[in-house]
Image (cartoon, rainbow, N blue to C red; front, side, top):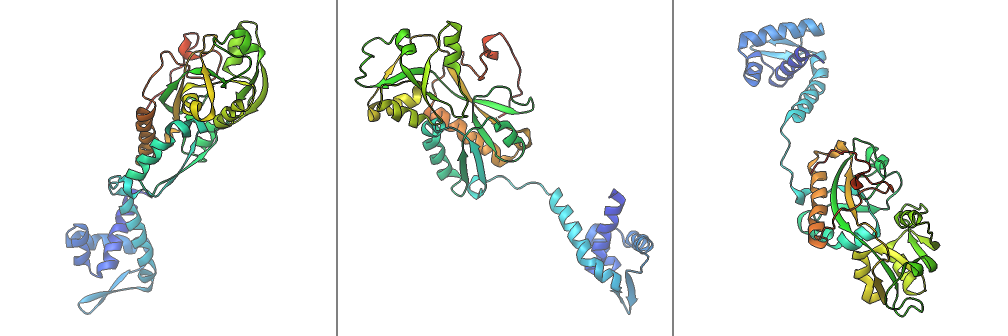
Length: 328
């Protein structure tokens, strides 16, 4: 629709609502002669008189009566589209957000996220779903709103923001028959392992580091959940390489022994990931800010030089670098 077409519709709506040329002129801010000229153009465009004289007033034609509700709806829709957006008020938010996250994220940040939302956006709903190999595709295709994790390659247009860091420790049950005192690399390799695989993939960072030394571990059980892995280790003679924050959280209640890893393992960073289509949306920005505030409250300590990718060759190591646009 051209601008001249919309101008005619605006004038036509005024004429049909007011039922007079002078009233329509006042409504849209034109002079009466200018509105009379516009009515002539409208009559020519529609091939219909639209308004006809009836004593001192004017009456709409049948065509005008048919057009009246449709034209008014178009004008009102356009007016609403052009109006300034109302200020965002979290307390009025009723949206349901879908967020990809592990049970580690829920354990470390879930309580703080919930408290902030209850205080500021009590009617909002967050539906947490597991991380998948296709988190970025879900974000792109409107299947979800936000993801928390560490990834390999993701589409270059994706937005990200670092959320928290953590480091790896080893965990066995208290009173383990093999591990006593200092935990050695030989013990790490010899003992059967529980592996946490949130996305269901075999292998991981520990396997890559061991392979660089010509070593390999034996994975007895692979599970998708951190808490399940910790519970399994508490009831067996397995060993688990796991994030320190969640290991410390359940160390006492599950009867675990937290050990320093007997080889150098770099810390890692978890980031927020979202698609640029929601970058400027006030509700989405609020949701991201909730996670950032929760991380500052529950995971404020930062670890130096964390890995930011799942790939063995991490860009933060200096071997490969890929810049990603960052947003708040």
